[in-house]
Amino acid sequence: MKFIQHKASQKQQRPKKKRRLILRNALSILLAIIALGLLFYPIVVNFMVAQQNLTTIQNYRAQVSKIPAQKEHELLASARLYNEYIYAVSQGVAFKKALPDYNKQLSLDESGMMGYIAIPQINVRNVPIYHGDSEKILFAGVGHIPQTSLPIGGVNTHAVLPAHSGRINNTLFTELDKLKLGDVFYLSVLDLDLKYKIDNIKVVDPKDISSLNVIKGKDLVTLVTCYPTGINNKRLLVTGERVPYNQKLPNEAINRNSFGYNFWVMLASGVLALLGLVILLYWLLANQRPLYQVSLEKLEKPTLAHDSLRGDFGAGFYLVTSKSVAIAQAEKIYPDQPLYLNVYRLRKHKELSRWIFKNKSENWKKYLSKVKNSNFVDKEHELIIGPHPTARKAQQYCLKSPKALDHLHYLKSVPLRKGKEQS
Image 1 (cartoon, helix red, strand yellow):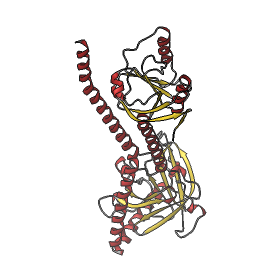
Image 2 (cartoon, rainbow, N blue to C red):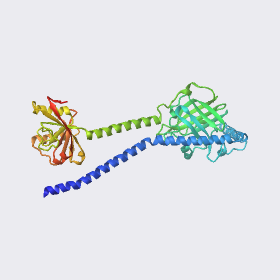
Image 3 (cartoon, rainbow, N blue to C red):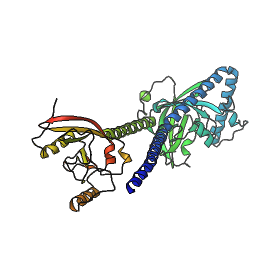
């Protein structure tokens, strides 16, 4: 009666184990999907932002192409007047003309876009420039500090363009610190195409604005971002002086962003994906690896009585992961008799109560000691997996119950002759 109750309880436990296995696998897949999503999120979002910027620039160019020449002349004249005002303030001179409205300068619509910037050497491709330097503006693209010249060029001007760095959803000026003296960047405002050669790079405190003053006779633009990325307790200033647009400079062809943000994300993604694939293949192969047992007969349906090749884990049916180890073990016991190499696979062994020793741990030594010294009989586990005592890379499997043998799938039996497989 007790035996029947035990069998019934085992049947009740199987669906529970199966449900736990399904739940664990589903959770593993979900976590893997989340991990991949987090990994590729920056690349996907930056691609989407780049596409959005491209659409914005195309719309801006279309608007510029439709502006009458007289209207464009008025916009530029007003912007130059604004720059005169900024210069006068910087020189401590009173500005006697009517003060232009900042938000109306270079504006074609309500978006507040005044142009766009490109820094090809760090893969900043045509990012919109907007009025102001609020968080909302810097989230959308590159800003412009109102207390500085508008970015239309001309002597006695110094435009300051801030942008974020280190943002996951938009790299913007993240790679600005890779630029060197002599590198270039480009501005496009209305029909003006401006080119600036970098002649000064410095790191300052956030409150230090002394480097942003207008310098008499100079046409300057300074790009500003937080520094270092992620810490943001300083400001990186990259200043360029205007040069002829068609002038070829030595540094122009140098790509400073060969190993930029997206490269490292892609590399890390590839490495992690490869590592995950290796682990998955190892897990699949480990669960499908052939197991070997050598005996005097073919054993298509082995029983616990076929335990003449006893091992370290006490009574049970033993198999090893190494064919050569299995043959060598059998030849020591049956040196002159014909033998059979029996090949199996162990299926769904996770449904068994088991103890797995991945290496020769302290628990492994204690288990062996109990088996050898006190004739220990393990009734708790149906399967023991552990390192082979003599073969460094082999593992031994000990099936200790009829239920465990039911999980053993017979593949084939190969007759052996003098330790070699017969052809």
